[in-house]
Length: 450
Image 1 (cartoon, rainbow, N blue to C red):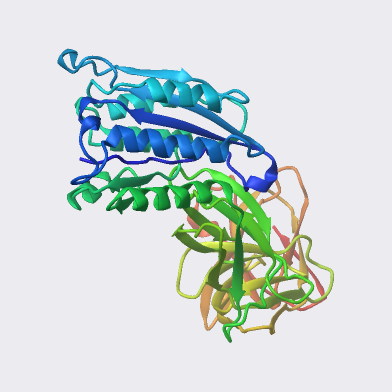
Image 2 (spheres, rainbow, N blue to C red; image 1 turned 180 degrees about the vertical axis):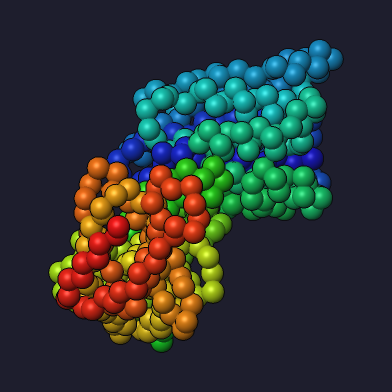
């Protein structure tokens, strides 16, 4: 069997340059099987683990904003099968690398392997202050206490304790990669040198600055689109990590941000409609580029005259029912290139389908100037207004029918209308009355209902 590493970070993690603490909790397996050779003719696994851990402590102890701690499991006698045998040997405090090395040097493997329980206990080892909380678990085998490391890992990820585990096995059978795939990303080291190299890579990912560039590409595949907010989510627990308003730098290229490589991201670009990319892997200590197809054009809505106050338009993708935006008139808004259906909230409503928004162009829609209708009531009535289109009567709006007010005012689009009503206190359907009238742009029309 071999030993593995599990590494993750807290949900509040930011780039190392932010000045927040990076905390490494080393969790060392001291089960009896650690006395076995790391490979045929190689050193004992516990000896290798102690040696590499000591070297790593030497390299980490003087780094700024780095704190260290040690948790151990498996020190009880094997015949006791103690599945709660895990202890925080050295907690987080300054200049404790020497104490950790002394503890490691005296360890003698003997017990079992309670990985799931140890991970659960490790969640409480970290201070409550914000920081990048890194767990490194060294073990030579799988769970032996009927625990479920996958379930524990997912629960800790949901809490933000472990976000992106790394599993490094030394000489492990490839079948172990399937076992640990639900816990994190698996690496296999064939020998001691491989282990040192992989471990150095993992630690580098925890400490080094990593950059990201988000390209919002136009219709020609060039990253010219900008000035839109981007929300970064943790792909595991769906928590919001940060928002960045997309910017082009002085050279006209998408600006670079520093980002934590230990997290797998979901990114939402708040265009209209929004764009999404999920489960984005970030390569540590590199400049990463994420591309979105985000060609955009403008939709300008205008209304003639001054008859309307706060007129709005419902915007949908062509042929779809979901409203993606409610745009005010006398404004211009950007949309992803495509065809849109508009429902303008005039009386009556105006439906315009398949309005084309093109790259870097402005589609203009103008609503005709409205007219005014004043209804004078001589008595209480119930009724509705209808517009006549193609010899069909289409409902527009109900009328209030007096109710203490002698007059009612409507703002209507030009066209031929009909009012249908009857006295409110009447019990005879035959007393229904009708009146036709026209509305002209900018004109005032008055009708009296008796």
